Image (tube, rainbow, N blue to C red; front, side, top):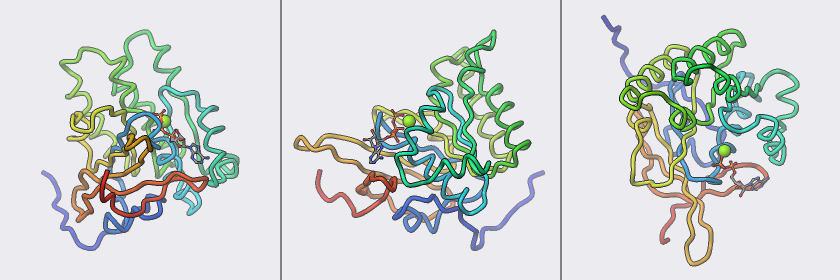
Length: 238
Ligand SMILES: Nc1ncnc2c1ncn2[C@@H]1O[C@H](COP(=O)(O)OP(=O)(O)OP(=O)(O)O)[C@@H](O)[C@H]1O
Ligand SMILES: [Mg+2]
C-alpha cells in the first residue's frame, strides 16, 4: 500500500541555469527524474554539467555518466566554461564516468537494466546526489527487442526514482513535434531548440512539462556564453 504524501511548500533544487529556476517555482523537485531534449549542439551537455557543477559548489556530489562520448573530451570541452570543473573533479565533488565502453563490451545487448544496476552501484558507493546520463538515446540505438523497450524504460525510471538522486536524462531530439517515450515517463521535460531564422541561429528553451509545478510554457531565448546557459526574454517572433 502506498503512503500518501501531501504537497505543501517543497524544497527545490536549483538548476544552476540563471533565469530558469524562476520559471519553475524555484527549481526541480529533489529525487525526481527530468529529461532535457534537444537537437545537436543545442546545449544538452552544457546544461547537464552546469547543473552538476552548481550542486557540487554547494556540497552536493554529482556524477555525469556518458554512454557515447569519451569523458575526457567532455571534460576538456567543459573546461572552456567558467564552471571550474577541474577543481570539482580533483576534489571528488564531481565525477565523470564512461559507461559506453562497458556497455558495448558486454556480450549481450546492453539494457536499461544493466545501466540501472551500474548507475545504482555507483550512486550508492559514491554518495551521489545529482546525476546526469548522456544520453538515454544511446540505449535505443543498441537496445534489444523494441517490443519490450517501453516496459524496460518504465522500469528504468522507477529504479531511478528509488536511488534518490535528482536526475537529468539527456535525450536526442530532431523533431520537437514528435514526443518520445521518455517524455511521458519523466517528471519533467525541457526542450532546447536550435534553429535558423533569416540566416541567424536562434537558441531557445521551453518547459514542456513539470509535474507538481506551476511553470512557464513559453519559448524563451537561451544564451550560451563562457558562463554556460542563461535564459532570457520570451521569443516574440521567429
Ligand atoms: N565556451 C563556450 N562559450 C560559448 N559557447 C560555447 C562554448 N563551448 C561551446 N559552446 C557552444 O555551445 C554549443 C552546445 O554545446 P553542447 O555540447 O552542450 O551541445 P549538445 O546539445 O550536448 O550537443 P550534442 O548533441 O552534439 O551532444 C556548442 O555547439 C557551441 O556552439
Ligand atoms: Mg552533448
